[in-house]
Image 1: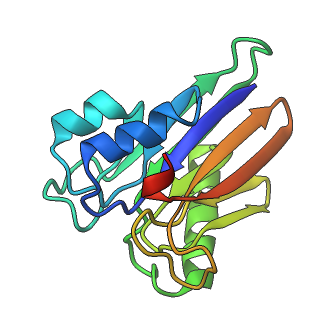
Image 2 (image 1 turned 45 degrees about the horizontal axis):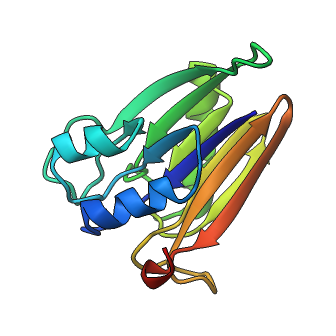
Length: 169
């Protein structure tokens, strides 16, 4: 079983707060999907993988591919991580279509993305699309601040969304 902590759009939440979230969630990996507004060395020290978003000072490192092999099952999982600020990103249907096509082109099962500030989990054409929402301000959601845990256990894929409450960490 693999557990991956997913965070996006933290927009300047401190290194200390991000570290609290990471340490309190007992995940195997921690990923940030952009708009962190932190120095790259801080991001490298906190997260297994991260990408930069449209609000980050560095314009490179916008999209990465990542492979994980589950040590217990030897199952291989392929991911694309990106922020999501690309053509069509404000048209939800077009964004989803573009992300599914991207995953298929790369042969990846998972697209992890941010930018929209909308928590999202859906499987389309054997591609899992996951957006943890925003640690600062979600849109179109009852939960105003969120992050997610992706759990993969062989063919069973689950995403749990959690409300970010800084005072409760």
